[in-house]
Amino acid sequence: DANDLEMLARGYENFLNTKDRPTLIIVDSHIGYGSPHKQDSYEAHGEPLGEAEVKLVKKNYGWPEDAKFLVPDGVYDQFKNGVGKRGAAAHAAWKTKFDEYKKQFPQLGDQIHRMLTGQLPEGWDKDLPNFPADAKGIATRESSGKSLNVLAKNIPWFVGGSADLAKSNKTNLTFDGAGEFYPNEYRGRNIHFGVREHAMGAMVNGMTLSKLRSFSATFFNFSDYMRPSMRLGALMEIPAIYIFTHDSIGLGEDGPTHQPVEQLASLRAMPNMLIVRPGDANEVVEAYKIILQHRHGPSTLVLTRQAIPTLDRTKYAPASGVAKGAYVLADAAGGKPDVILMASGSELSLCVEAYEKLKVDGIKARVVSMPSWELFERQDTAYKESVLPPSVTARVSVEMATTFGWERYTGAKGKMIGMHSFGASAPLKDLLRKFGFSSDKVVAAARELLGK
Figure (cartoon, rainbow, N blue to C red):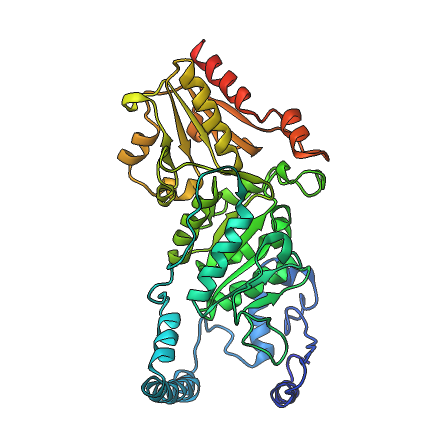
């Protein structure tokens, strides 16, 4: 009975005294309790009771019927002398204990201080990998796994796991001492969330609220199961990290039930959600540098299953441009392009191939890597126009997802190469051909815009 305070107290005492298992307390209640005409009805749930009914409720409660927003004498003092004093005393005791702890264990004390204040340890980004140019390359989920292990080793309070897909997501922490998080074994850094994405997102949010840096992982298509938790993370502005792999039709034979199409656009529509879809292994490393320093909102990292080229950064712009959200990767001579090719993720290499082909044909093109719309929109107008000059209206976007939203950057005169249906079950090469993702298609779109 929700209105039996003694019964509630007994249930709570039982919870406090039970140490070896969870406690389930079921409380029966009446919606609109005390309302003579609306108790136990849908009206009490969906609409105000109305002034006359509220007076009747107050009468049933023995409350002054005409009083509004009444706080009786003594209530403030009750809170101040009860919860207030207990909280102040508990905090003072904790602070005294923590001060002693810092004297005895200065290094660990510093770690706790940094964790609680949202700081990172000195050298948190040391030993992050730098990937050499490689035409075959590696999947961005692979470079993510290598980066995660370095970061977790450097940041003792960095923990996380996957929804039973750690081997596929490449999120296993394998460095010496990483360990598994199990009952009565809380030192482990690998958390096995099980196939329950919504709960996983909620757990990561909770750990993040407790000042741990925590990450989750699953296939990108399953972000739909996690959406309510992600939305609350964005609403609370907490720096949770959501990792998604198998980010497009590029995952191949698993087919359209597993191939994301609309997910990227729908997450871009979510307020306060930072999304990064890196275009090669080194962009993944830069993405993690940004995400770990991002403190006022969650981050979504979107990664490939398939291997993609690692770009030659001696030939093209450095991957540090990821910090701006979008940057000029390759440019026309003199920095005056006739056409701009834009992409995120695995499609970036298609634009680079197209750029080289257009260059041979004497067509001046620019390639813009656009891993994060959110970061790009935070830049000033001068920077954004230096990347996407308003005078250049011939623009092509390439992304293996719905084209929804790209018109913001292509403009009315540009072309968008993307998905206009769900995917299909086939090997990657067949899928790319079927859905029109190739450097030749990008070249053809650029030529059409230029009338060449």
